[in-house]
Image (cartoon, rainbow, N blue to C red):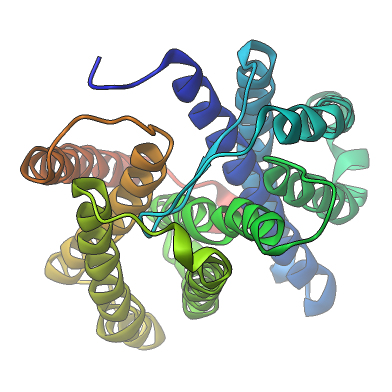
Length: 332
């Protein structure tokens, strides 16, 4: 339907699982490291946050593993409207590396899950090392979409176009999860929000990686409805990113520094900007995986706006739910 193939849906879920788990492992390691370097008892809150992000690692790896079991082939499409499909030989070569690697990732994750649920004290003692190992393995896995046997421009493009999603889509999802998590207490906001500018910079770096990799295959551009739609979404992402990482984040941090609650107006603006960011990256990722999508520009744009509306309503509902929940004593 609409030119969408079943295997493309499976591959989409595989990539979503890897990038979410990879980003959660990256930022979980950052938070757990901050606890290690902070030197005060109060900073154990960073380990608590890292533990919550570890749950995203488990979920992401489970999703990617299930999708990979059902998936049989791989293909990659670039965000800027480039269409570059690996040959069957390149796909098989990548699969020969990816399947054993995903088996290793699954086993490492299973061991981590075992200690997380049955021996949490032991898990916490080695949580940083576990998350760093997961990130490295998932980073490699996200890059393995095809293997040509040589490091030419197209091969490097496939590498970069794979792993940049950890720093863009995955990090955006983690950022929003942290925003929702912080609704439970002001104390959490004081530890999480100051890191938002750094996290936003990593998203920009991820986008820069994507643009730079596209220069390696500049001759593959094809002006289509899909291409024009992608340019529209990228423009929205840039404008929204400037607003989110600029005035919105500065206003949030200023209220936090003054010890005041964030007014509902600014909370709504932050929620809307976060929703647009997640929706845009999800839309880009989803549309890119469907090579023969038959929807025209107007239909794609209307579906995009509809998705923003649905996710914003859901986000607002989750935010209000988190505000009503009682925060743990350790994080008040």
